[in-house]
Length: 276
Ligand SMILES: Cc1cc2nc3c(=O)[nH]c(=O)nc-3n(C[C@H](O)[C@H](O)[C@H](O)COP(=O)(O)O)c2cc1C
View 1 (cartoon, helix red, strand yellow):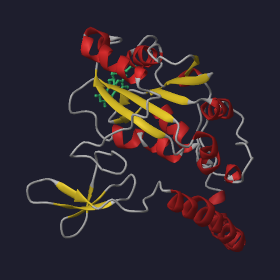
View 2 (cartoon, rainbow, N blue to C red):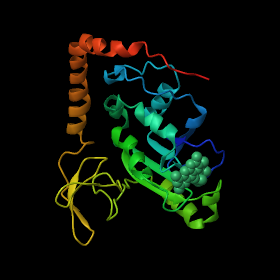
View 3 (cartoon, rainbow, N blue to C red):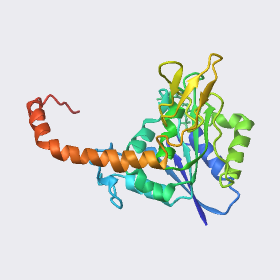
View 4 (cartoon, rainbow, N blue to C red):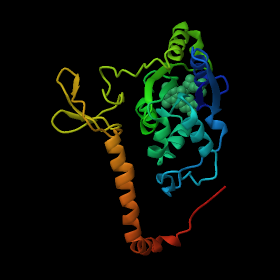
């Protein structure tokens, strides 16, 4: 039987993220085991940059709930994330979780190709900020198949339910979760990853800061991207970054360790830290 995990990244009980994740999950026609995690109820600490998880089979050594969450994500056949926009980006707990995915290449053996839906309620039109671009990083790192990243206007708790179109859309997402449906980037989005942010380069060139694909901005405002064989989230580039570059950095660190320690020493006694 299929397992479906709903990840709610909002402290608001029965808020928009929660009810929409539940609406999607309750409309999956296939027989499945459903589980919900409210990420904000769990203890997710910052990544301590030890890189232990880069090694296959090595769990994150930080003592908190991350390993519980990633195991649930790995075992699930599909992931439905509900994460609101907080100050122009995804809720900070979602970023905390994404930061813990240095071992993404190892997890991707379990998560690759599995469907992922992101529902992002936002409360003020024009305040969506960089939230969509930031939210799609996590499923891309895990090599999941993005079914949708649905940004939905809803301010008050549960307000999304006032509009029946929202409920219908959530139901269609549930019905089509396992149908092979895949996110179709809009005409103003990166055709490779779906991000809606671009960095301007020289001579009308634009770059997607999320997947690194490049295109040309035309005078009429449209853009033309040549779909590259390799982009940040392709197998080749991910291996170059995680198995190549990051491991090289480990060797470089071992080479330079003593010299770096020497440089750092002068700062050690500046103990101006305060705590509550
Ligand atoms: C601390 C905080 C910051 C917020 N920042 C934004 C924002 O930058 N842009 C926006 O459109 N909505 C913002 N909102 C509104 C929420 O995105 C909106 O109310 C959403 O429906 C909350 O989802 P929830 O009910 O699942 O918690 C913010 C809400 C809070 C509490």
